[in-house]
Amino acid sequence: MVGVPLYVDEAVVLRTHKLGEADRIITLLTRHHGRVRAVAKGVRRTTSRFGARLEPCSYVELQLAVGRSLDVITQAEIRRPYAEAMYADYGRYTTAAAMLETAERLTVEEREPATQHFLLLVAALRSLAEGAHDPSLILDSYLLRSLAVAGYAPSFDACARCGTGGPHRAFAVAAGGMICADCRPAGVAMPAPETVGLLAALLTGEWEVADTSMDRHRREATGLVSAYLQWHLERGLRSLPHVERFEPEIRVRVSEDEHHDHELHDHEHHDDEHEEHHERHDGASHDTGRGVISR
Image 1 (cartoon, rainbow, N blue to C red):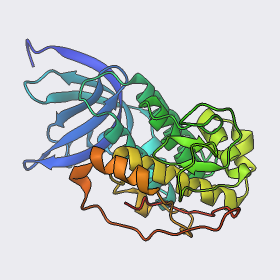
Image 2: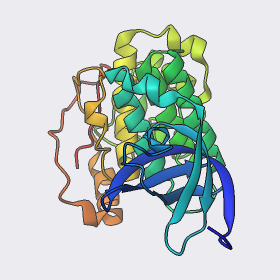
Image 3: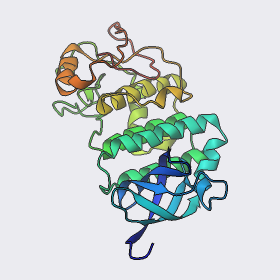
């Protein structure tokens, strides 16, 4: 490709789809150029030189030619074979799929540098491939950290509304985390203190705390993380229901005033599926699975 500007970058393949008879469009999260869509020519042919290197979860080094609308991948080399480990195990594969979709949803603008998102995704895929921790913990930690990088860091200590120091009992998805008794609306979740400690550990990477947590606290944390993610993405991840996780026991409920505020922000998504509200008795904690926000 004489005269065409070239550049080299590291990337994780987020997803692919067919183009024509033999090509694919590859969606990438790169270290220096953010989210990029590029054409990989001829990769669907059995004679392709690098078709197998451009599967979702692949961590690669690429050379790309700058195009008018889509760049063109001219070279691809594997840096780490994470995709092989994911495809060998269904639980890892579905967990990785949720990570890839989250990374794409949170990097809204193409070609906007997103180095922190890239490094976070690579580290999460490495931990998942190596079996460093329970896949569910890795996923919840990745989701919380990705939201924090995107500017939606939850508070697990000070009140998310007024800043009063904790610990606090109530978790309000729309408020941004734990809230004090004075700021608490009706119908919020009341997680166990151990669950709040687990969530804080997942956000900060304190794996000695996370790895020794109990299953019921992991279930509760999973529900809160999923609800918090759905709230900020405005609709759920398509890949998340396929993840091998804990069975949901109680859904996370959003209070009426939070519901009203979110509808003003998100009126275009009024046709999302509604989940039944589940009320709780005062003083009891929730064991939640994959939380769904009731609207």
